Length: 268
Ligand code: G3P
Ligand code: CA
Image (cartoon, rainbow, N blue to C red; front, side):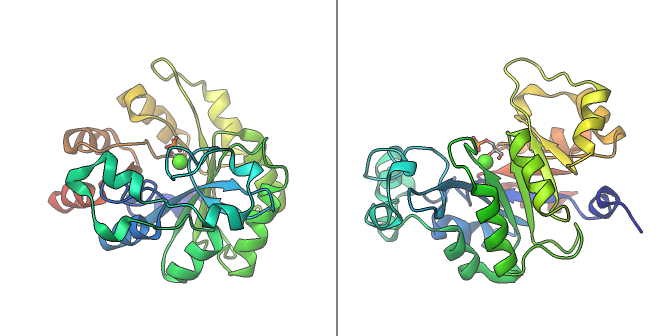
């Protein structure tokens, strides 16, 4: 049979709605995810944190402060406490020109609520955030994905990709459920350099890599592709950057503006 990466390589270019269409609506709310879907994104990106009572929620930061009207760490709050927070009004204040009355009072969503809202017709690009803070988060993620039959029998039939900056978290996922396709995120503080050995090591458990688009060049993209790995740079919001990265051969893009990427892809 075809290898995991061959199956993915035969797929078309992937548009990933970063935190939902988060350029237009408060990140990680159902409103932002719905907009992403409407803008033809292939994947909804969901960052995960875990509550004190062990529930996986869609949130980027370890603290609720930036994206809600509350304060404190997710790990110290129960889901009931987090459900009382307003996850939309901050956006209206930060971006008055994009403000919508319906964003006020939006709730933080659990991963299960996201899946129950969008179902098997959608695809989810899920990130285990701060996995060292949340022992057992991978087991809980697998439990939810299995319950909703999103894992599939092979990489291509999987409705989910799991990404993490933590190699340990991805290796745990790989042990628990090897058929789920994984993407290794890499944080670079300087222009990106990677060895062929590192890429071959990543290939033992992952189908691709993701990193800031600002740190890579054409030769980096070609090196990754030469190893048969996918490459999904984040977070690409400008048309000219999208065009350049596509020309370099990236296989997908995380964007806060999926409609801009859709327009670029249509022109091709
Ligand atoms: O997951 C890709 C990208 O989202 C990683 O950065 O901080 O936005 O989760 P961050
Ligand atoms: Ca992310």
